[in-house]
Image (cartoon, rainbow, N blue to C red; front, side):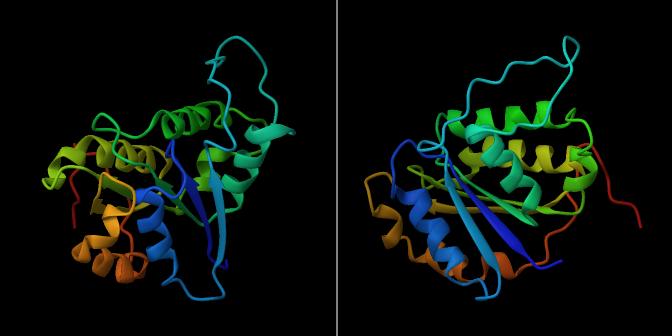
Length: 196
């Protein structure tokens, strides 16, 4: 399968530090790799309503939910580009991930089986220089990938608060050059141990 990257932009501000860092990493992808960029602020999803036990599920066919559903299924690689908001993903991204719960029950799609083996990546900018404060964000993405049997390429972290700050983070820009080159391992929950 030809690689196809979906970049899900989760910032409340366009051209923010997280998006700038994601675009720097994407510039390194080979030209034959398709890229689709969807800004969740420009394509907002409705609040997720958990109807697991109350109703029949149908495939989204119109609006932003259908756009994101189809783009997600078409992607071999999904890149969540979310700034660190209160030490986690943005509300836009959380809403997108919440919709995955409904998509698991979409008839005829086999969302979990379809996503298995694909790769989830993260890109985030944060104001702290101590990157461990992003551990909750990393955990959300890793555990979401583990649940679906996906690979997890990790999170590209950069420092920045004011617009454009991340472009002065030379370490982050250097990591961006090779971020998507790595072979992403199968995601594991923290309680799982790899046995050989």
